[in-house]
Image (tube, rainbow, N blue to C red; front, side, top):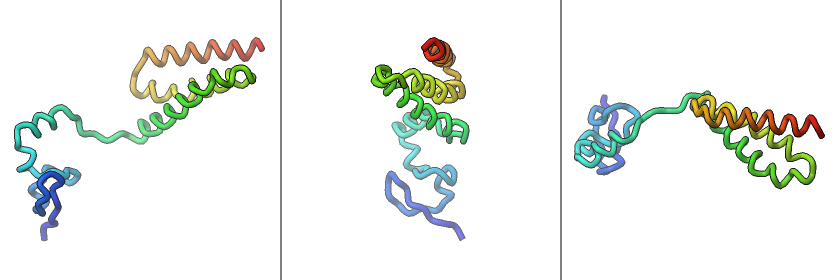
Length: 119
């Protein structure tokens, strides 16, 4: 017995074999239109690995720490939040192999580490 699925473009109820694979939501007949084919070629289909997902979440948290740090410097805890932000955002840029941002984060770690050490 073949399972039927609904195409998200044309809305027809079709057999599963009319789709490219199980995770595809657009039927093959809708994908054969030339503009859809061009758009599909421009987008790479892939899922994030668990390591990339954790890195992204840590990166957002690190960015939040770095954004709030200038406002906390007068209270004496801004340096610590800069360090926490640099440490949290480091895995995201390391996994993405954005080496310029890795260098900036190491510079941030060294600079604010010395700032805290001297105060």
